[in-house]
Image (tube, rainbow, N blue to C red; front, top):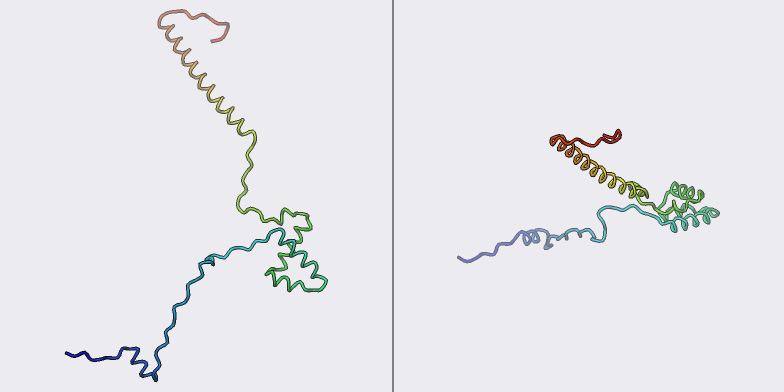
Length: 155
């Protein structure tokens, strides 16, 4: 049986559309691997904050503060906060602090307290052993009928 040529869908569409073939659309490009999925909060170093504040102070005379705010992507409230910190003399506050709960500084006496507690536990154990030995000696003396020497009011 001879094979007959049957046009495929693309050729049939090209014949119906005046000889044009269907347009092939490429798949969208995947996201760049250099971009992170989650945006990160911008942080400014103390040097950057002081530089921006100096630019703003110089621009205050020419009324160009808005241009600097747009260029840096800042709000005026951020500048107010930075000015307050600078005027308070809190240059250490301009350095971004470590986030999260504060860790307590170790007590310098805690090592000595731990050593004394270990020594107390060791001596308490020795005392319990000594009292047990004395009790056994008293019971043996009572069984053998040996009178114990009396001490001056000490049992």
